[in-house]
Length: 285
Ligand code: ADP
Image (tube, rainbow, N blue to C red; front, side, top):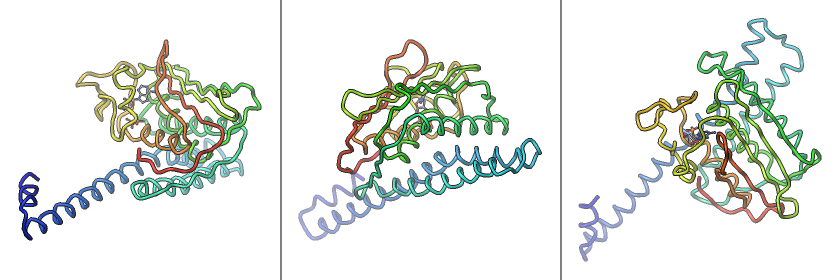
């Protein structure tokens, strides 16, 4: 790289050519990095609905449940979600280039979050089924007040955020741990405060900001150890460090905020969404 820059500093035609070459090489590098990131994003994001779908189908094949319309509806819903996720992940590839549209609408918070928790419960069961994790004993709770609370947001993008946070909370929960999704009215009119709490080891304060950066796992190596030492509590391997980066990007699109909050026990991630949706703006996870 140094050699390239030196050649470009020459004030003649060769220098101009070298500068152009440097720019082209840098562009190609950026494209390549972006492509690799997208592949990693896709694998990370597709795991949860695939796990849920697999659980439903395996239960039917093993005779644990019947292929009744209700079970098939669940499978269909996961398939639809997979399709939507692929679309969303492709959005990520457009991030560097332009504006990502936000399809905000008003919806009731309680049934919306209950649906996400139900899916998370099924994915959790599927992980246990595959033998990778045994977390069927993690309790998922929903706390919405007032019960008729409504939100104005892009339901699909917010789904991505909440599902990611629940997935993390379950991953880091101890046996019999409790994961709570809490929703309240925010300060401004139509604003919403969401929290996902767990009883795991939490995130060290020094990592509160960097865990929202792409590929940052807060000192957690792929095998779930911290600086060579194993973290207390069950930690999933195979994480990519993209979940929170994608969550932050989706929250940014809403003009909202996401962060780790003080907690006496475990991890507490707070999401604040303003009521009126601002103009869509470009952003990068
Ligand atoms: P991944 O889970 O794939 O590593 P994320 O972006 O979802 O990626 O999370 C980044 C890092 O933040 C994780 O590697 C972990 O160190 C930390 N983290 C996220 N959620 C929790 C949680 N609920 N409890 C403890 N640590 C967490």
